[in-house]
Length: 105
Image 1: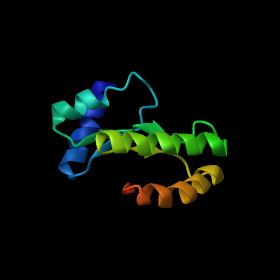
Image 2: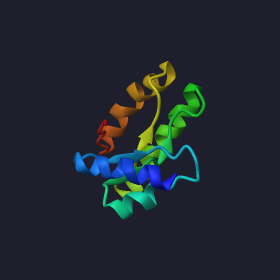
Image 3: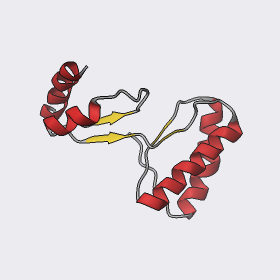
Image 4: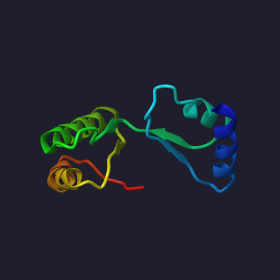
């Protein structure tokens, strides 16, 4: 809903905040509305744990790391589920050795 997001984004901008779109739908209007309102906006690159399988999550982490290497940055979104946390614990040190820097919201 563009009008609703405009109201929210104007308030976020007034408070000097930003918006991260997790892109749970391909019908998101957030990028367009953020641009119109001048709000700082980012969108997710990789969703880490659509599946709760440890190997799948590790693969998604690898996708995230590769995207960051290729483009200079990438945003991953996940949940605080056991396998997600385990994958992060395992891969974050490896990724940092490869030059990745993790920033948490």
